[in-house]
Image (cartoon, rainbow, N blue to C red; front, side):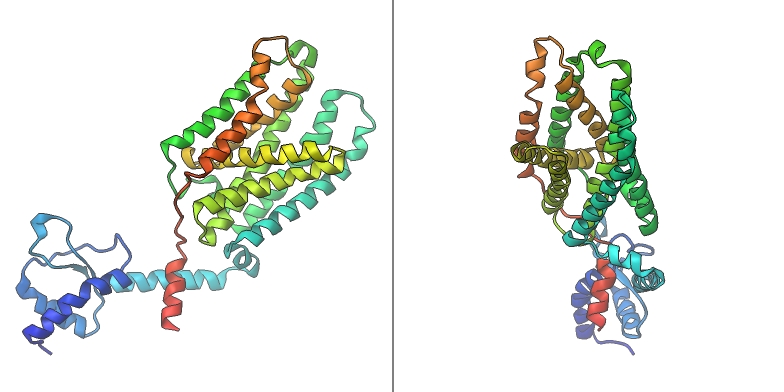
Length: 358
């Protein structure tokens, strides 16, 4: 049915908002109609129920073209929704549970990991009684339990299908000032490594701590900057909340040192440091765009702290290296206030459409 001029103008006025509501960004394209006389044809096609994806042109050259359209626009949006719904229906209840994300699922995952890690420590514990070698004690008491934890985390990532998400590029870009966190941590790691008495420590102990550091960096970063960050983003939280929760849960993991006889005051200080350090690792994740770099930076931190604390060298830089914890705490807490942004959850489109249609 042919529309009158007034009706055509009415369609012109309502089409842009309709296009914004149903057409994903980036799919508008194809043939462009630049003649206002063809708008009547466009409106009549719209009235018959043909699928159109519309958007306003962005250049002066196309100023006379009110809209661009492609015939498959709405079909594309509906196909996107149908694919999401189909994938969701074919997904196991285990995967659907974790895909919802949220802070309490993050807490549940961290608690489960902590319990399994402690059980692993008990398994390897008897081996500590049969050796007096410091290097072997580090391997058995620290490296092997945390390595077992890393294997458990990989299995979890495989079961949820998150390994590609965690180890792939980050969905949100970092800012230049986030490099401050990387530099602060790396600088004091280098200072600590430069002020270790390696002759006193021995090659075996140094190598054992470097290996243990790799396992620690992998397991703790994959857990907190990988899975926890992923869970929080899936729930739609702002990035500052993502950073806070991931750092808080990372710090909470170290409260278990009370079980090994560490004093409450030392544990409290450690919690403050690990919280700030967790913020620095989050910023490292953001600015580098890949979790590999916080893993490696973390892997160099623990060995440098333990070795420099137990085997300090007689160097004027030793006292300066001892200020590393204070520097990291200040850096993490100050930079926290500048964190902005939010990662859009791709499933929100389908969820919103479901709510509108229900």
